[in-house]
Image (cartoon, rainbow, N blue to C red; front, side):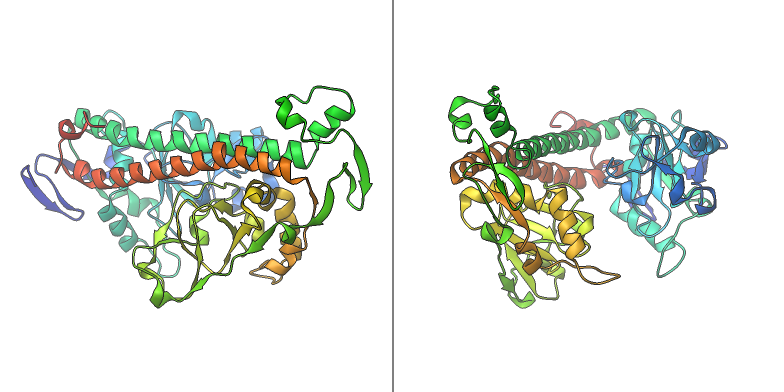
Length: 445
């Protein structure tokens, strides 16, 4: 360590750092608070439009994830307003993964936090919220918090445990500089995530327009402009015909998912998996998102797995209603609870991905799944899914657009974010501990 250091419960810290209990670094009377418990809020209280209430599932990598957040009415918000969160708060998981936390940002807006969470409200005249949240991200801190949590099978925190934790910190200006450096990396990662989200929405909209609603065909049949370049518009027929699935474009057919895709069963034994091979389990797959930006490594794999290649479609067959479908960004191995799907020929990739990731396909696989507590779907049922099969020229153009404009850009952004997160994870303990001074890295960042 380049600077004088002191030994702490989290490892070495700069000697000139101050230390204090967390409660003393928080706003008086609002420092560490538990959310409303079940007796105050029930499933029936949730509404479609209202104030979001976050729970453990919405604590991402130091960010609140805005996917499937339940909402409560305005009257419930007023009743529970003391459980609201604002910019600069930090929300902890109270039960289970007690090392999970998220910093509340301005764009998160007005929200409540649930009884499975704890809210930390820093006194910003003493401690920078960004610095404190990154302090909570120290590997040594995470290990410590897991160690002092109550309970073996279901670890839990409470306000007393969290309030009494020791925090080490430099002067406020240095805290803010550290937060800025690490935050710059996180902001770029978040920008990539949002770009991928936009690209996916674009792909989904085109798929629905062309292959579900048949909008180009409808426009041509009604004498309207399709809004597409002429060479693409000419590939669509100008009328409809009846079929067993109802009205479909002329010349198109009716078939099954198994006619355009197959399940690649490339099994591999644990002993034959090369160390450091990327591993994707269901825990790495986000819901309703084809961008798989997280994966582990195979050194801890102890059972047989399936091989997959970059660009393959991974489909979570356990509890299919979780809607875990994505495009593999790397070559690797995956859990046997994940099906590896590939198109029968490369030009059908976009079409296969569009169906496999659609809500309609998920509903079908969920209805056909077997098992009460742990329902699973299977390839035989999936392969029988009925769909409209377009002519190959339209499919080829769609795949060219989706693969080149969407999938490749998504994968490129994933790899950039993976590099940035590795850099952040490397810098975080060195900056927080004082081993690296902000001036040494700020210009580079």
